[in-house]
Amino acid sequence: MASPEPIIRSRQAEKEINGISTQVVCTGFNNYIFIVVTQYGKIGTLISVTPDSGSKEISTQAFSTKVLLGKDEVLTHVCAKNLATFVSQEASNRPVLLGLALKDSSIDAIKQMKEIIRSCQVW
Amino acid sequence: MASPEPIIRSRQAEKEINGISTQVVCTGFNNYIFIVVTQYGKIGTLISVTPDSGSKEISTQAFSTKVLLGKDEVLTHVCAKNLATFVSQEASNRPVLLGLALKDSSIDAIKQMKEIIRSCQVW
Image (cartoon, rainbow over all chains, first blue to last red; front, side, top):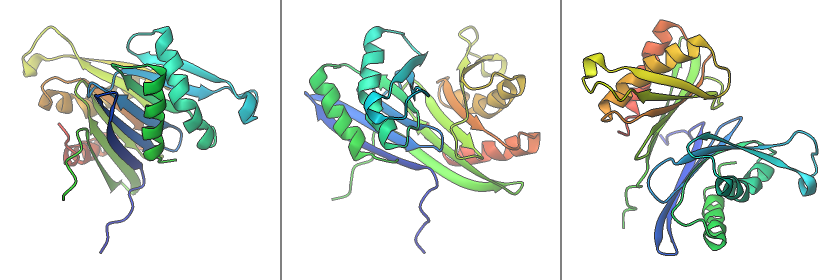
């Protein structure tokens, strides 16, 4: 008998980005998509990325980012918005809980990380 | 060729506890064990459970709990300590990041949840 599909979907992938081993884990909960992007094996800085309640139009949708655990740095908020906005939009505005432990947060690296996240779609 | 063991270990289990469907997801990061115990499919209240740095003796080890996301209630801290202390102790004092969305937080239910967590050992 095949084992049933688990209720909580989780997927992970690993890829080299500019020579750095990068792991992504995505887990879909009812009220949050949980994503970790790590180049240290650590959960890293934990950030919630939440769509603002005002506009429902994707083109004008704004997002709030909040650091829950770890260093609160401007770059972290920028990376978090960059990585998680499309997930939330595709997941009917579900907020994203994001763990980030990055050695390389260049625009090019972030772009490649988004592709890995997309390959681990659980929403 | 067999696919290699993923670097980030994740396991999940589902069980009925006193008639309520309960899911547990455990993921092992280098610096945190991430555990969600949910009876709503939600990530729920997010709590960090961290061993205090003072004593290294297991018998006298104290733990700090902090609510990072969700309602900060006394019962949440009690449940979190109850569920996560043994994990941290077994995982060489790694802190635990715990998501709790419980319908039933009776002592008996917590005891059964600990058994499910144990069955999803990633540390």
